[in-house]
Image (cartoon, rainbow, N blue to C red; front, side, top):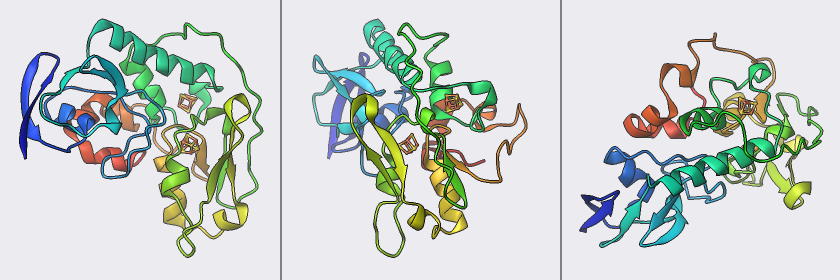
Length: 241
Ligand code: SF4
Ligand code: SF4
């Protein structure tokens, strides 16, 4: 059903039930995301897409649009709030971008640039989370995990449907875990899919490393904003070049 909503003061005609992130992008309004993948069930874990809808702050990816919605995306307080959320993700892990295999192809790094982050306003926690390197074809750089749950929900054993990745613990003790037996059964394209679906450099494919030269990496060719607005389906191929 055709409906009218307002985004940042502009009246927009769209279809009821569509995802607010997608509706905004279709109309040239960029809403940052990290856990959201178009055409996959919403996870709502990172909250980086927070906007104000009819006066209440909510994660845009969780919201199907309906008639009469009034959405604020680029009000200064919201822009700063989303920047703060990105800054929190940086201090909650250890992110040394120049030495990271995902640099230039990392959604967190690219979104940090997009929101204008230079340093975090929050103290760095420097967590100690041991890397997991026991599987044959991939390893986990746990300090870079942002707990988005993409791998947990969307990368499963192809025979049993069991989860290969899980998050154990809560709060500051949480860490990503890997079922090594199931991981060693993953075909090569699923290993690549897991590394690509991870929005940061936590899931790394062994033997690949720095596979694109500086200047030709994913977000150096096209910014995360341009990708979100112009190539929506590329979100589902996060990391592919
Ligand atoms: S995962 Fe992304 S943000 Fe973290 S160090 Fe690697 S490139 Fe930087
Ligand atoms: S390993 Fe990557 S995909 Fe999995 S929860 Fe952590 S950040 Fe998300």
